[in-house]
Length: 509
Image (cartoon, rainbow, N blue to C red; front, side):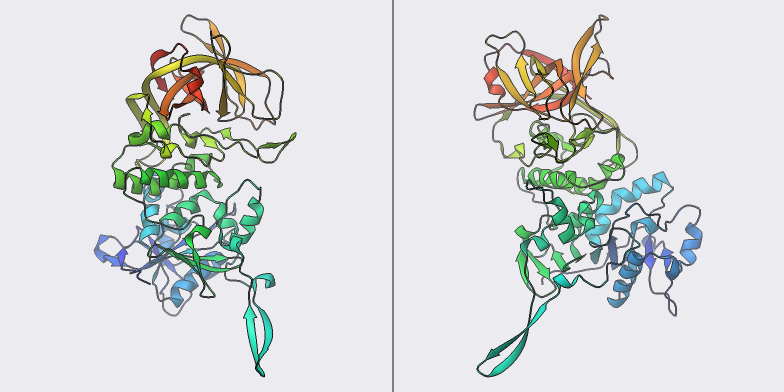
């Protein structure tokens, strides 16, 4: 392999695994003077378990000694691997970040992408649902080789054969055949976690300890190496670490694909939505120089605003197969995909070759910490563009996402299909003149099926390509006077080309 694992600057804190004469370890703060070194980074599931952590209270004690007996099995495993490979330093998030110091967490979370990228090796504890479970363990016999006796020209040979299943190596993704649990079983619970997506995508070298065997990936080639020395094409692995392109819109295309993959994964805290991908966002910014706007990019803002929630498979003939997307209270604006908990649609609008119909007047993003790619407290974007007043309704209760949008004051009435961000619900918004307007908003509850609704909305025309027009479905905000919020995505807006439009400058929150 052409991969050159050079020494790199050490993280702020690392675990020193070379305490002679004992299995114990200690926390070490190298500082700039000690220069560079090789370290192993652990990617693992916290799993809701209470685990050993470094805090401002025990920091001094942890720098003196961490007893082997108090370390969970997953931590012991990666330390043992480091010792076998003669690598002195190990980076583990719960031990190397002060868990009760918000400022330290913000600073270190911003560096996590770099830590995984610069590590000598990332060890992914793919088969461990929590730190208490060892990932170096006996394998299920179904994944072990079967031994056969073959006779050829009077010579007998013992041959070991193991089935090669393509899906063994596919990272977790809930696809439209609803086989999510099977994928998780094949590759392990780690591949369902959002934080671990960034760790995988940014690592230069990573070895997965999966339930079915070892899988090694490296950015230096286009192959996936498995323990029996066979190689698989990268298309068989959904989240192979790959360098971001610097050609045209390609970095943004790659970004959306990674964001889409990340949207399928789980987070314990909704406020981690943006911090969990902050490292990847920083890489895109370094390549493109584009301004980062709460998960979107100003350079391609028209296409970027046209994300849509994936509502496929939410309902099947009167029964939900998975919960619908829901709005989250994490500070992210409604125009960002990060404001939802749920999957995004596969299709990206970055393959469009048309032109924007909007003009960006102003953008504002308020951060909750020092990381420009981390958590936000609020954000807004002011746009000028053509809008068409319309109404959305569901005349009868239904268990399907069949919202339709019709332009106001047109005859004959023409409808446009809408992909809602969530289940929608009725609400009232007070206008500046004191009157109330019947409109809609995202539902914050996991409602089963659509309630009968009716409300006024505004369709903002955002992008035109090959005589097709794409837009956002907006409503007047019930929280910020004079502002608008997004509740959905609309395609097929070219049906309204002949309708009267109003040029408006609006602020989205």
